[in-house]
Length: 509
Image 1 (cartoon, rainbow, N blue to C red):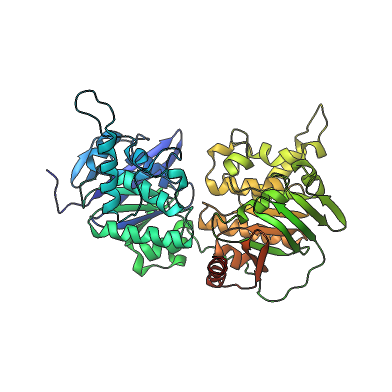
Image 2: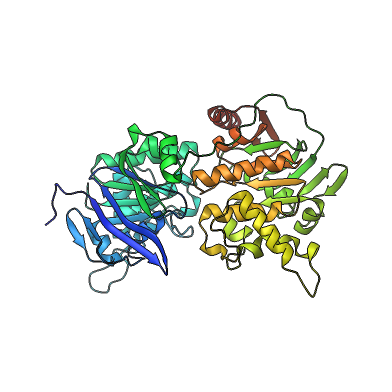
């Protein structure tokens, strides 16, 4: 029998090593009933390892314990046992299948079945889906196709699936970077749903990189650094972003060198005229040499397509002029754009940006192999020098040029991707969500590296939904009003940028 006075989750003395490396050292974590508890730390700090121990993916070292409502789970944790104890997980990408209905997605892993033939009982499955959606106060039809839902409703379906088998008011839902893809309004709706869930007595463990979200939405926070708990169950009402960041990094976070708002004068750099294609209908954009221009809008509105139109990755029409060299986008390939000095740091580093099974050195050297090497010999000296410079400049960790990309944290992968394209000496650099899913220290390193690139005369287009990044790094920001119009604002206040995004969206509707 469970102990009603016990913590919902009590983790004690959990350690994990991979070979000679200790990635988690005697970790402690306590989550109370009805609590929204945050787990934060830099990439590589041990957050994901701890979650994977709780869900049975990793086997911890000896001597640890995991208890739910006072009942100890056997180690290593078996997922079936964790599920019976009331642990559920909502992953970063929600883990939904777009071609299935809401009821089908909610049933994944535990469909309702007929008594004798054990076939799926679709009527009962729809009833279960309707019940859970109703408990969450979500107005979603169980028969609706998940691929047609908004991001906030998709998040709701993922939560509903996680809570499907929980005893009302009980259980622990782990939210593993589950809010990353939500826009401002959708995030507000998501947080409101979390508050309703918490009020019933269900506990939640929120793994997040957003310190603003952690401090405004959660009750307490546990901080990991280098596999050790350096802040256990701290009341978020008593913390600031600076204090939590200092715990995460072990030092004061380096400030991003905020560029002053107001009129700036730059030499001519990049001129884009008549840009047309998916998301664009005869757009004109000018960016000075050394200028950083932001581009933003509502998630899913279409502005996210522009980086790929400008880099030859998606067919487009229009003309791009760098200095006095004109490039027809209708005939431009990715290779032609790179030769002209146009490089793209794409949003999906794992799919579109990096060769995950190759080393840091190989990834950074790849775009310049033909420039330095010969068909029969690539050479190693220049690759070593180039990689060492990148590691030192961007603070890539570990300082191991032959370490495989897939073994790095997300923030260090992103630094390698940035170094890869900075190595070609671009004249026009396009960055799409360059700080997505990176910790506060990596964000600072990346944005300051972009600032340095601009100071050397590179024209920069920073495409992002992160208003704080745009406010800190950009000279001005273009707000996407639709495929044929952009509104320009100049501000170092993130709220001003967000207000402009939603004001233009309201005007358009």
